[in-house]
Length: 111
Length: 111
Image (cartoon, rainbow over all chains, first blue to last red; front, side, top):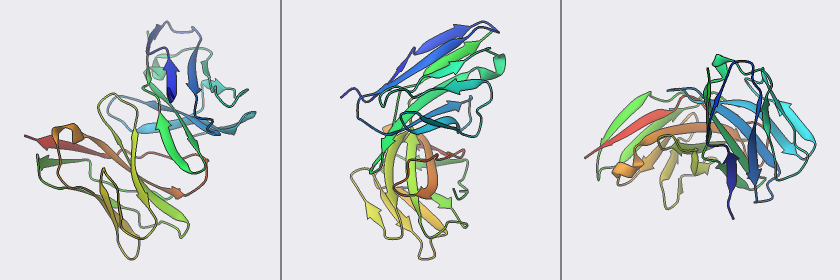
């Protein structure tokens, strides 16, 4: 099993550009999450999903969109990148009786 | 989810026990105490969880007070590789809904 895979690992965006952060898990977990982590800070929940076709907002959803068309994939979309979205983004997945596994993160810089 | 309070930072000598406290005075009856850690720049890693009994696994021990308002994570023989940020989280078990990270405790293991 690869676990939780995030791509890309690094990305530099210009203000106003858009991009999709990819997250894939091969553990058949129902629950998936996106967090962001600013330098020196804890993780903030952006969006989460309890199953295919179901998504909900977390603490800091503004400026982001998600979709969950399959169990495996949970992409995070930035439509109009802003400098405030410079952060490290972590994806995680879990099942009902297994604790969360995290990906290795995507480091995004918006200039 | 109940709010938790942790010290911002702690030091521990290599080979000694590291005791990381967490206060969760508003914890409700169906909420468990979870611990994760994040080694620099990596995704968080699950350590241990418990309800009211003390728990031990290959990584750590978790001591929960009888009134459940606080807990302590114990790393019995800290190594340099245990230097990380440790997060205490309280949430109901067996749900995939959102869970929130606080700011955690930055543990530095000193040679």
